[in-house]
Length: 349
Image 1 (cartoon, rainbow, N blue to C red):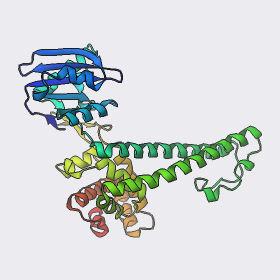
Image 2 (image 1 turned 120 degrees about the horizontal axis):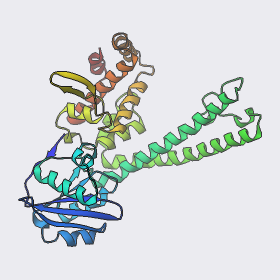
Image 3 (image 1 turned 90 degrees about the vertical axis):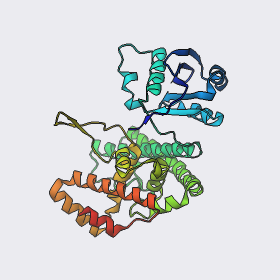
Image 4 (image 1 turned 135 degrees about the vertical axis):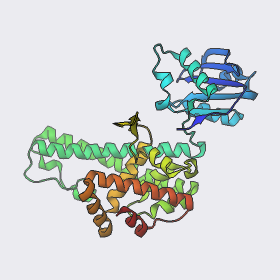
C-alpha cells in the first residue's frame, strides 16, 4: 500500500456524497481554516478553496462519486489524492461517525502522510472501462437466465437434458418441452430476454474492440497472444490494468489482481489470510478464465495441471497457474513481448 507523503501548505479533506460535500481544510500546523458543508457543484467548491488553491492538495475517499472531483482538480491544476476505501480504517472505525468528522479525518491523514492511496484512473479510458464492466454485468444476467431454464427443466424432471441452450443454434423448440402452459410461457420470456441480451452484447463488443484499438492496439495484441485470451478477456485485462508501469514490482501486480493470499502474522505466529476483497476482482476473474480456456486442446498445459494437481489438489493447481499467468502478463506488457507458451509451461512444472 502506498501513502501520500508530499508536503503542502494546506490539506483539504472532502467527504463526498451525491448531493453535498463536507470540506475540511487544515494548514501546515494542523489548524482548521475551513470546515463547511456545500453542494456538490464545481463552482461552489472552487469558490470555497479559492484563497488556498495555489498551495492546496485535495483528498477524497474512493466512492462512486469521485470522478467529477478528480477531473475538476485535474482541469484546474489542483493536486488530487484518492483514498483507498478499504484501507481507511481511521474513517470507518471511529466511535462517532458523520460527514463533519470524516472530512476532518481525511484531512488529518493527508497532512500526516498516512492516507492510503487508490489509483486515479485516467479520464480518457475510464468511461470505456465502465462500459466494459457493464457489458460483463449484462453477460452475467444472460447466464443467469440460461441457468434458470436448466433449473426449471430439472424442477419438472424432463426426460432428456436441454443441451447447450446458451448457443442459439442448439435451442430448438425448448418451450414446447414443458407441458404446463404457465411454465412454457416463463421459458419463452427467458429465451426472448436472452435473445435481446445477445443482440445488445454483440454490438457492444464490436464497439468496445474498435475503441480499444484506438486506445492501445499494441497491448491488446500482446494480450491476445495468450492462448485462450480472446476479445473479452483481452479487453478486460487491457482496461483494468491500464498502465503496467503503475506497479513497481511484479509482486504488487499479483497482489492487485488477487492472485496471492496475504498472510496475517504476529509475534512469529500465523493467523491465516486476510484482505481477500482488496484488489481488482475483474482481473482475478479474467486470469482464472484464461487459465481454464488455455487448457482446451492444449495437452502440454493439461499435463502441467495434472502434475500440479497431484501435488497440491486441483483447485490450488489452477490458482498456481493463474498466478504464473499474472506474472507472465506483467513482464509481457513491461517488456512489450508476446506470450511465450514454452517458457510459461516450463515455469508451471
